[in-house]
Structures are given as C-alpha cells and as structure tokens.
Length: 86
Image (cartoon, rainbow, N blue to C red):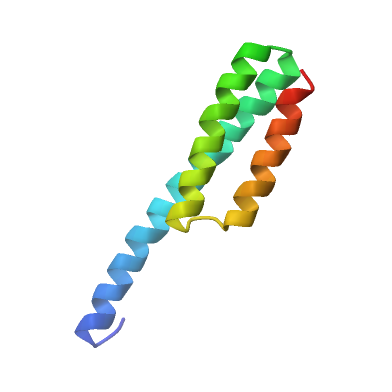
C-alpha cells in the first residue's frame, strides 16, 4: 500500500473508474448481443431498434474513453451489417 496521501487517493479513484468501465463494457456486450440475436431470429423491427440502442451505447463509451473511437466504429459497422442481412 502507498504511503503518499495523493497516491492513496489515486488508487481509490482508479478502482472506481475500473469498476465503472467494467460495467459499461458489460452493457456494450449485452447490447451488441441483442442485435445479433434479433438478426439471427429474422426480426427486422427488433434488430433495427437494438441496433439504434447499441450504436448509442458504443458512441457514448467511445466519447467517455472506455473504448477507442475506432473500435466503436468497427463494432457499429459489424452490427449494422448483421442487422442489414435480415
């Protein structure tokens, strides 16, 4: 454990950020899975709604720095392609 007061605080804030990022990434995986499942089931309306929701989540995660903007773009492209095949 650190002896310096500011380092102790950094450890605490880094842990909070880690848990927040973990939660956001979990939400992203769930949202992307919903798009893929709707596309696999052939439900166009549900796939489009899930695509909109997942795209918004991906954009927000990228803007907050949880994932890189290029990774968000790649994931959005992949799920859009999956939703379009329905």
